[in-house]
Image (cartoon, rainbow, N blue to C red; front, side, top):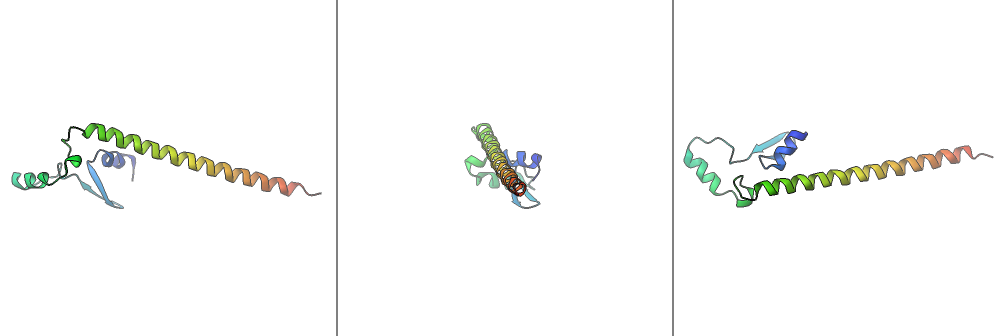
Length: 99
């Protein structure tokens, strides 16, 4: 998923259904009648609604959690790369210690 779709997902504007398929938030979707729209919006949990008073705060919290997750992944990759480099250097050093 690219960064733009990730941001839309964090903002609860779209939901990833599976790879390559996203579903738009029911509050943004088009309906054939106002009654259909009202009926659908009434069943949406309060926390998932875009007009929730805590919407902006929950968005910022989701972005921060995602950024923390990315930072943790970067640390793990860096540690793995350092371990591989150390192992390669050790192996290379043992090859030259012929004597």
